[in-house]
Image (cartoon, rainbow, N blue to C red):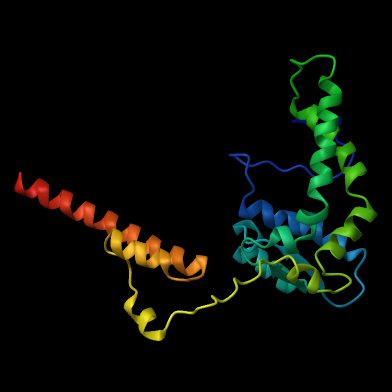
Length: 225
């Protein structure tokens, strides 16, 4: 690991037994990276930190540290970071592009060249300078509608609800429909003008019931044998 520092000009390096982020490393990042760096630009009493739902971001110790230091921890809803998280929307793509270019540059005269950790640290530092620029960061906040605040930027990208059928089902027909028990029931369900989500829900329930019935039948057969 000593060689890493010879190739690393600034920043922090942390390791874990399995190479993945842990709750402990998440807290260390808050203490040694986010807290001191964000304080340099703090304009009010509180600071905002937007995260996804990864366990290392919302551990008890992380929440306690944020509360003590007046850091508002805003956790995005699941499966929304591609719309609402500035890093996902405007930073990670140019960063990964620059990393790929850096790797290609080192391998262009030797296709079998192997990138080791020291090589990667050098490539990453240059890629970070080229990709995480003030322009890209500001553009990412604007693209997510967070600053300037504009919810329509995200709302306009959400899937629109399906239009209501031209001949909606009568209430008696709705009551008559149930989880399909056979192919005839399934055919009737497909002919009904349900939304795709509602239709899928019925089909999933039917599949679960069918698989459960198979398991029960197998168990009975084994007992009979």
